[in-house]
Image 1 (tube, rainbow, N blue to C red):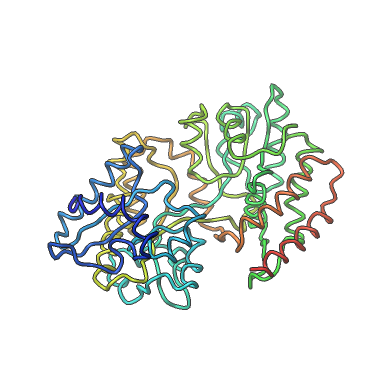
Image 2: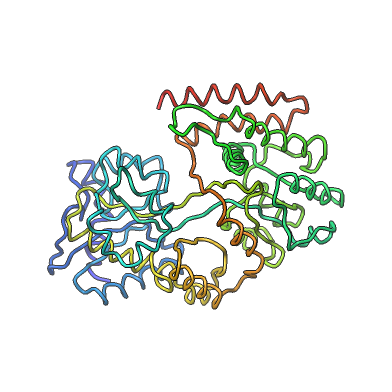
Length: 449
């Protein structure tokens, strides 16, 4: 890596300089280093506490700069990669890096507030860009113009315990494909006794609303209308979500008596082998093994039941509106190397396997065609987890409609928490009234913008 002195100076002095003088961040809009190279600042560099990931990132910078001696990449560490509480202020204050991390749900907002560079005329020259799934590219396209490049993606599925399925007389290689089948399987698992819970769901801290959203998508419904101006939960699909949960909780007794659960609670249950199923993205699997006592061989993943849709998300990089053409070109070259090439950067599965990181999980799955095939082959070659456990998810998810989180997601999730928690804690909860009330509150949230 080059310009290490600059990195230290800019990182330590930036907050003070901005506060006192209002100056733009070091590097933004200035593409010339002292030696004539094009300098780009890039965030989402792993923190020093994550030693292996940090070294991998630094090694990637060194390899990239060796192959591109006219470019100087300045990494800025951050954990998490984006803090929603300070994101807008950092943009408005001119503190954002030249190439900066965003969630999928940020893209349109960043464009709307005029803080992103239009990279349409440059991205066509980025190798592999056209191989990225069209639905993911569309996330960073606004009014026909391109403003960013996807980095990773995820979608929700049904995580289940193969060992418990077998013990309950269920076929662990044929997971539930409908919510009716989920209900039947949960009932059989709970009938084993010994504290087993067939199915668990979140219902607090906005997480219940998040899962409600995934579940209504799976039924073919939505949380807001297509124009994003009104709620859309008081529908047959919304009622089906709450009715299924209520039936499993009170009629089947397959969800256990402890409710108002959040992510950590459910992960603890699954990791300890006491839970049959819950909906999850693939990234939960290594957490269950490394932190919660689970075993890779017991954990399998299926597509979202219902067969119509699934909640999807992900992240990527956008470009500072002050970037020069040279910085945009350099940034796209860096992303081409770091995020968008099988076997390179984040997708270096050989290195990941050597570092004992899980290789073979079904996502991210960024590309289509030959590029996807190459990435899947490399994953299979260096896999250190049972990839066959995720084949149903890989096969089935391709047919589902991928839908992003709604606008004003956290506020909406807070409202939906109330509906989900009510049906799980009150046997006489009135689903029709809950949905009517939730829709009215969501209408108010969207009206306020």
